[in-house]
Length: 245
Length: 110
Image 1 (cartoon, rainbow over the protein chains, first blue to last red):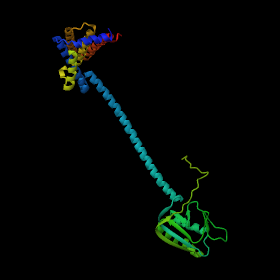
Image 2 (image 1 turned 45 degrees about the vertical axis):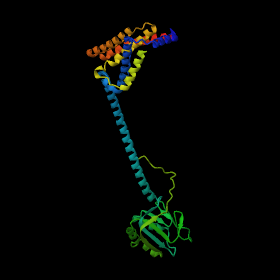
Image 3 (image 1 turned 45 degrees about the horizontal axis):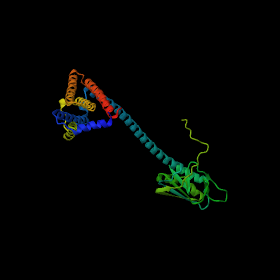
Image 4 (image 1 turned 60 degrees about the vertical axis):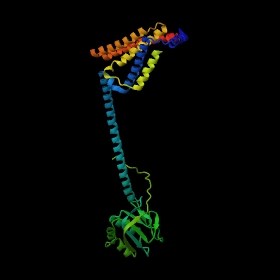
């Protein structure tokens, strides 16, 4: 029939609206159709679950239950992961804190960090150049025995490996860790001041020995002094930590 | 012409009034609408075939709606409402498709 004939036929119908009762009825019915179509479409959009049958509702309920269980499991899993991560980071922070504290303690012991605190200063005046390396070492030992935690002689930090050497005859002073120190020797020791003071002043102790040799030691208790010299640690070349045990 | 105007008026009224479907009508209205659509497509096809008849259209429209609603009603009471509704929709869908195919052949000759 084709386009044109269809259009012609429709046009003819449109041009001649026959107002019969049947026509009006058809119009009414179509109006009803359009009305209910729109209403039903709206209803379906808005109402959702209430128009579904029992089996469909059961199916939806099952689906929702399954989904909620799955999500619950997922939430639990994520919570566990979160707790694990949180406790892990806590542990890491605690370990870091402990490591830092340990580093400071070891730094003071090894002489790689400056230290401050109460202690004593010992000044040894030696007008006759009578003080030798052995006497300085004795003094250091005495201070250590009395609980000195950080010791400095002149500008040299005293650590475990510090050496005391008498220089060539004729030149004065004492070579401490490669640095030649000469009188007056000034010790700075951090520890309990009365204990250090007593330790130096015992009969037959450091001060008395010095006096006998013609030198003069002066002890001064200080509430807060600073051991600022730093011992540079050489990286061990041969020794590595033994991690077997 | 009047039919087209009626359809338009119905759609506009539905959009403007926004009524809610009463509960007792809810199971039947969707099927009735599909059945009426079937009748409309049949009428359109008859129009293009040149054998359209007002009386036939009205009777087929009303009988379609009533029979469709009746089937759903029966199905609901027999406990197979959902299945019968599906069956009715499938059958009407097939009819709508065949009528649409006939209309298409008229218009596109294909």
